[in-house]
Length: 588
Image (tube, rainbow, N blue to C red; front, side, top):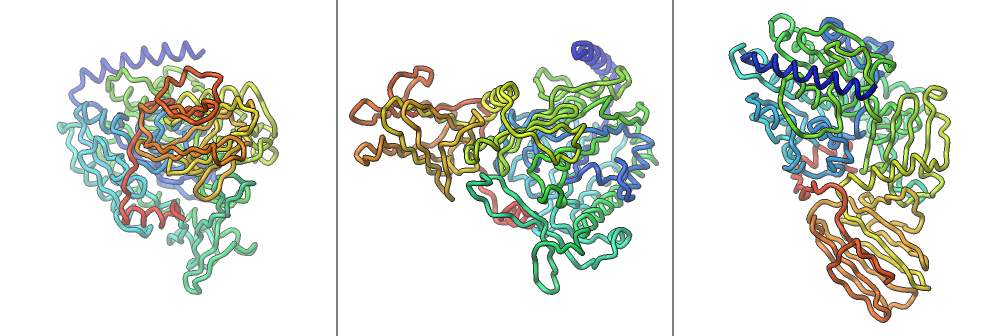
């Protein structure tokens, strides 16, 4: 079946390219990403509140709606990198606050080379040029104010309308990217929508507060919705009589977003621009509003990983694809847009073009398994298949019994009864995924002695949130605020992955047994060519560059690059961008 779909897709792509090549101007592209928008709070997706009436009307006329679509990462930066590259988060490797490497080819760059005029209007934060997602844009406008405000989406829509209204059929095609944090934390009343949904006081806010981390919870960031009363300057857990306030405020933000976008839909319809423009409406991830006892995102509950996805291709009728017909992914957007615009490429993507389905060449299309990864701050790897989800813990600082969970979503759609324990077959698949793709440095310990090998890791490369275990089962390491320490038992081995960017520092201190006389420290600056062994000769420690494949019976520590070679220097985030991230709840 998959082979047949691939042949159909290739055939259709060839015909689309031939058609576009004979046309003077290829389709324009409008890509809209609403940050933190969960699909099930859109009336377009059956929500009982009329939160998106304008989107509903446009989608009924133009859109092809995917009822089941998934992100590749449940937080903003890696999800948008996937949106722009067609690569999974484990492939592109931008899983921490870092600039996007120049070696990643973004959608704007591809279309710019095709002759497109490229424009972006974003809410800043992780979509600020300091994170290098502006590559390939002729114009990139980012919100500069710290406070989340309705003026942000209004300004971004205004910029989008300016480009659309000025475009003439004889002009070069445009690619416009519109992004907004209007539905992001902090949740504040947007009128008149809040009063339509709620009878609670409109001066209240909800922000997310972080639960303390501990060895029992690992490095997973757990947040809860907290009520903020600006007049009394108090904040705390939401009392039962006000528990509806979180969804009420969030829904008012969704309705506000929908109203702000309505001029775009009207402009597309009252001109012939809609017949010349591919439109993609989606989100980077969803949001938890108190379900499962937590709030926000970076988790792997369905409310976080399911996203809306609506695509309008000129000449194709509106349609809805149920989960029985198709499952789409955020990484499918780039190959679909490139296919529909006949933008030639020989690059391989993790995503798949949805154009055969959109064009009616096939009636159903089951995409490969969805992989969802979050290295920061929750450290999970999830495998999503129809009706089932498997979640693996990737940091080494949690009891082994909690390393893996599985959910039968057909019987337990609320995910209230996870099945705990090990599934070796799926564990092997997850281990292979984790070890083959993310850019990292592998730190391998081999202890052939009769005494324990004690290890202390320091430096920004060893920040506990960056430390992963590829075996998904490791109970020999502990963490404090700024160090990782471990004990490798006699005749045992252990491996860690350090998801550090190029230029990060690492200090390793090791000793055999309790004697400090055998202790030695070494410091390194990580780079893609590093391959070093620190080994025990029987009476002393020595360090040398070594081929990591030549393991010996000597007790040693090997530090080598692994996975993709795509790495980036850490950005020097300005105080202004840091204030933006703090206002959005990203910096605690």
